[in-house]
Length: 173
Image (cartoon, rainbow, N blue to C red; front, side, top):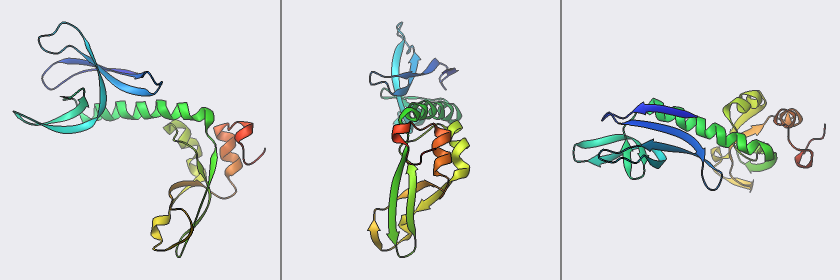
């Protein structure tokens, strides 16, 4: 995915989502700084604010600089990057058992081994429920868990939708 836009000071910048040397999807900015002739490639880390002689600057933090673009543009890049990363996780995704028992909430179910892209999440979200063991003041057994678990009895359907490899399946077809 690529996005070409202009910063607040008028410089053209091209954003691209590419894999880094560890094969992880990252957002990179390609731009030519004032007074330079060579295009630079900067790793974009996050959205943030930094002090500047003219006041606070808000934008994408990249290579020690603030690239002043709209937050909507950053969110578009961020969500696309997360979807790419989530799709990478699908090849080895499987269900993992979680257990927590307290005075108010008991959790005994299966969660996902990794994050996934939004398209896949939309397919399985009707089979998921959000839980939070931090509602318990006292934990009798198990570990604290906050997140999504598969609704009881729906585990096989979720594995089917996710196309979990046979060697990782907990619920045979």
